[in-house]
Amino acid sequence: MHQRNMPLYNRLITHISNKPISFHVPGHKNGELLEEENPFKEFAQFDVTELTGLDDLHDSQGAIKDAQHLLTELYNSRKSYFLVNGSTVGNLAMILATCHEDDTVLVQRNCHKSILNGLMLAKVNPIFFSPEMNKSLSIPAGPNPELIRHAIGEYPHAKVLILTYPDYYGQAYHIKEIIDIAHEHNMIVLVDEAHGAHFQLGDPFPASSLELGADIVVHSAHKTLPAMTMGSFLHINSEKISEQKVEFYLNVLQSSSPSYPIMASLDYARYYLSNFTKEDIAFFIQERHLFIKQLQEGSGLAVITTDDPLKLIVRHESLTGFELQSQFEKAGIFSELADLYQVLLILPLVKQDTRFPFSEAIERIRLLSLESRKTSDEINIFTEIKNPVDLMELSYTYKEMLNMPYEWVYINHSVGRIAAKMIIPYPPGIPLLLPGEKVTEEHLQHLQALIQGGARFQGETEKMAVFIDVHET
Ligand SMILES: Cc1ncc(COP(=O)(O)O)c(C=O)c1O
Image 1 (tube, rainbow, N blue to C red):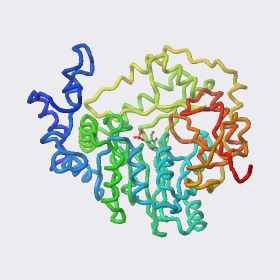
Image 2: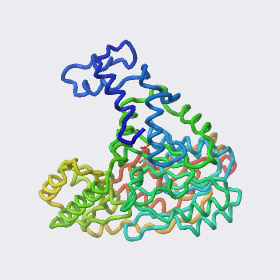
Image 3: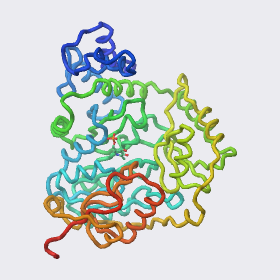
Image 4: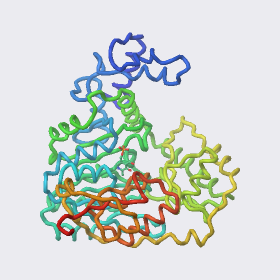
C-alpha cells in the first residue's frame, strides 16, 4: 500500500457518507442528539465505534492494521502502533513491558511525569542522572555520555536506560553515543521522543532516536504533527522487545472504546508527514525565517533558536517569561509554555499549500506595549539553577513509599524532609521534586522563584507532602 493512502481516514469518511443510522454507542448517535446550533454536531458524526469495516484497535485486522502498517513503513520500525491516550500511555507501556520489579533502571532526571509514574507502577529502583545545564537559557540540556558511562560503571546490573529526547525546548544532544554505550552493556534503551514525531523529515530537523538505534520510541503525534490531542505513536525498533508484552500493556492501559477521530487523525498525520516534500521543508524554513525577523523588529523581543526548527524561544529584556506570556495572551496569542526567563512557541509544520496567520500574529504583537511591572532588581532575584547532583537514588523504594504515612508541612519547613508527592510546574510537566527525593535548600529556592514568577503548578505549592518515617520518630 502506498503512503498516499489513508485507510482508516477514508473508511470513516465512506461510513459517514452512507448516512448511517445509529443504534449503537456513543449515545449522541452520530450527533443526532446535539442541537442544531451545537458546533460539535457535525464533528460528532466521526465519533463512532468498532462497527463492521472500521476495525478494532485492540485486534486490528482491517483498516487500522493497514494504517499501522503504513506507519511502520514510514518510520522504518519493526512495528508501530497508534495510541489514543497520548505519549503518557506509550511511556507507561514501554516501561511495564521491559522492566521487572526491583530492576535497577537508569533514568534521565528531567523526564515527564508519565515516565515517573511508569517507574512507580513497575516498582523498579530508579537511578536518576542529571542533564547538563544550558547556562544561557537557564534550562537543563542533554545528559553527558561520560556520565552515562560512569552510571553504568556504578550500577553495572542496570538493565534499562530511559532517555528524553529532544526536550520541550527542542534541544537535542549526542543521543547516538549514549545509545551505543548502553547497548555495549546489553541495556535496553527506551526513548520518550514525545516532541520529535516530525524528526522523520531529516535535515534540518535533528535525527530521530529510531534511526539512531533506540529499542522503543514514543512520539506525541499531536504535539508537532496535525493530529488530534491524545494521538500518539509507539514504535518497537528492535528484536530485543517483546511485541506481545507491549501489546498486552497497550491493551490493558488504553480504553476499550478508542476514539475514531483520534485514530483517523493519526492516519492523516502519518500521511501528512510522509508526503511532506523537500520543497515543503524549504517553504517552512522560509516562513519561519521571516517570522523570526519580524518578531525581532522593534518590539524589544529576542528570538533564540535550538536544534529543532519547530521551536522558538522568545525573550524580552525587561519581562519574565510568565509576564511576556500573559502580554501575548492579551493579544490573543497563546504560547506553549513560559518559564522565568522566556516563552516557548511551537511553530506549525506548514507546507506550501497551507496558510498560517504569521503576519496577523506580528501585527498583534506590534500593538502591545511590552513593559514590565516588576523592577529589574526583582527579576534578578531569580536563582541561577546550579548543576544538581550527577546521580541520585531515592531515599525509599516505591514499595516502601506505597504504605508510608505522610504529612503536609509549609514549604519553608520542608528542607531535609523526604517529598511524598511530586511538585510539577505545568507545563512542562517535569517534576521539580520526586516522591522519595530529599528536599534541599536549592529546591526550595527554585520553587519559591517559580511561585513568585507566576508559574502554574499541578498540585499544592503552599504546603508540601513529606513522609513521616516511623523508624525515625
Ligand atoms: C517529554 C514529554 N513526554 C511525554 C509527554 C506526555 O505526552 P502526552 O501529552 O502525549 O500524553 C509530554 C507532554 O507534555 C512531554 O513533554
